[in-house]
Each structure stands twice: as structure tokens, then as C-alpha cells.
Length: 484
Image 1 (cartoon, rainbow, N blue to C red):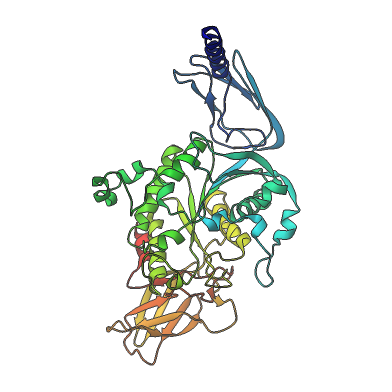
Image 2 (cartoon, rainbow, N blue to C red; image 1 turned 120 degrees about the vertical axis):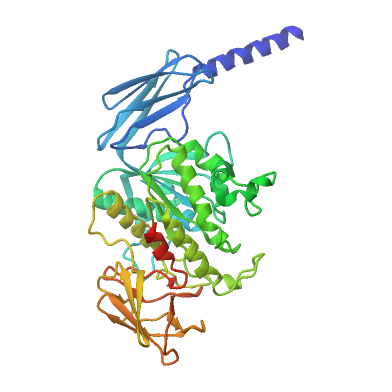
């Protein structure tokens, strides 16, 4: 019996030595991947402590020695764009890994809750809006777009995934629709390989996507730090981050797109969401060691929160106040936001249609901000200033070239109030790049609201057909963002 036990222990020991001697890679590094061009590219993994590792790719050969924990990392010098598949060879004294079908181009990561997670196979084309067809898209195959989906698993120390796949088939069916269409739009314009990473979880709040350390670093959460265990508005921070974001770093990428907020709106989070968004952005940029990585998000869509059976009570203004918090988050450098208020068929559905248009609008931001397409219109009209002349209000907007309505009808969803604060519907007329408001019930206007109710789907757009953002002049969130 003792001999048998000794043999078992010996075999286990030898197996442990053999396993530790083998090179292991994080799942984000694999065959079919796209590597980010024009910046240093980290390649890392684990092997036996003290062992040497060599990485060979695109004419480069870099080496590293594993530390006491077996961790190693090499930095490839910036790579040039390549749409021709290449192989990467990683070797040590005792093992070798060859990764195949690798391209070099642009890499982005998309995160959020169900509207980002929304699968391609669930997306349906509908007449009247958009020009794409999910059914046709699902039958396509584009080897220049590569998809990496992080599964909804809280598994450590690495993500759960099927790895990198060429766009098509089951990989495309199971992928985020907004993230895919973002990648597709970039590819159609840039004509370079696109790698798209999707890591989302339906119904998730922002707190689980942010590590506790990020909240500890911000004065806005000082009072939360006094309570143990740490909770941010009854939510444990960081579990999604630790399992579904942190293991992906420091894989080289260009930036992030983010579609989340509905679950935070459901807890009336308008007072804290901007600070939570700051913590999220700070933490993701920190783990990638780049405080300038772009972060582009979506203003959540009109929805009847007042009809939801949440734990808190909502009013028709709950959502507009949350929109204001989202806009305030734009004070963070290298962030932007799109508006999707015109992409809703039913305000009772928290998952608006036309995800291809969501992805396209996010891509317009990236093209304008990151890829030199300076003339690209990426935003709808945004409130700039107000001038009162007698009983009229003249509104100035940014991104206002070619103001019009998207249905050919009179401009809607404006209201004005006098000193009494009683808002009434306003008659709105487009005058060049301005909108002039008046009401027979308000002789001395003081403030304006636009689309300031949860069901608002206003018809004011610019020449690019992009919808105007909601605002209130007594909140002045756009002016605050511009002043910072």
C-alpha cells in the first residue's frame, strides 16, 4: 500500500514538473487573433520559474525570463498593418507553441449589459430604418474581422471563451450585434483587419465592472470606504472586472465602447453614475497602462421606467436625470457619446432595435476622433447656449448644420417655463442652425427643456440625420462638460 501511494505521489510530482515546464498563454492570445498595429504589443504567459522564453513574429524575435511565479512577458516593437495571415512561434527549452492565421490591424473592446450583449442571431432587420439586414449578415464570412467573445462566467484566473474566430457562422451568431457592426463599419472605411472583443453581461450594473481600488481612489466614494465589507450602493464591486476584463490586459488595443446604464437608472442612480463612470474608465485605462485610451458610450434609450417593478419608485423624470449624469461623465478626457433616441420602436422595450445603427454611430465617433476623418459628423445637435429676446428663446447648438426634422413635421418635445418654473409645451421653429421657441402661456421665458421625459423620441436632427440630445437649461450639463 505504501509503495503504491509513493508511486502515486511521484507520478503527481513528475506531472507537476512537466506541466510547469510547458508554456501556457492567456486565452486572449491565440490563433486567429488580430494584433494592434502601430504600438508596442505585449505577449505574455507562464512557464517554469527561471526558464527562458522566445517569441518570434513578423521578423522580430524577443526573449524573456520567467520570474519566480513563472510569469514572463515580451514586448514586440510596433507592427505595421498586415491582412496576410502570419504565424507566431513561442518556444522555451522544453516546449513550443505555434499560433496561426494572425493579422495586424485595429483592436477594440466592447462592454456593458444586455444592449451590448445583444446577440447577432436575435437582431432582425425592419423596414424604414437602417440599411442593413441581420439575416444577410449572418450568412456572410469575413476573415478580415476577428471576434473574441468572453463568456458570462465568473471564472478565475482567466476568461472563459472559445477564443478568436473569423467573423461568420456560429461565432458571428453568438456575438454582440453593436460590437460587430462597430467593427464592420471600421473595416468598411479603414480597409484593415479588425479585432473585436466583447465582454458583456445582461442586467449588470456598472459597479461589478469596476475594481474596488478604483472607488478607493476617488473622493466621491470616501464614505463608502468606511463600511466593511466594501459595498457601492448595496453592490459588491469588481466581480465582472476581475473575471471578464482584467485577464484580457495588457493585450494591445485601440480603445473601448460601452453600452450600459439601464440597471443603474433602475436604482435612480443619477446622482452617482458620473462618478462611477469615472471609476470605470480610470480602472480600465490603468490596467492597460494608458490614460488616453478612448472610451465611447451610448446614451441609454427612452424607456418606461415608471412601469417597471423595481425596488425604487420612478417618475417620468428619472430617465432624463440619468441622461444628465451620463452627459456629465463626458468631462473625462478622451470620452464621447452617441444618442439612440430615434432607434426605438416601443418605449416599453428596454432593448431598442437597429443595433447595426448603434454600432455604426459608435464607429463614426472612432473614425472622427481616432482615424483622421475630421469631416465625419458623429453627433446629433447638442445644446450650446440660450438667448432670450422678449417672449422668445433662441437656442444655439453644436453639431447643428442642416437642422431639420426626421419626419417632416414641426419640431417637437420642447417646453419652456417662466420664473414660476411651470413648464409648458413650446412652439419650436428652425431658423438656420438655431431653434426659436415661444408659447402664448409664457410671456417672460426663463428656462427650456428638450426631450425631458422618459418617453421622449424627438424629431430634431442635423443634416446627417443624427438626433438631438436631451437637455435642460437649468441643469446645463453640456455647458459644464465644455467648460472642463
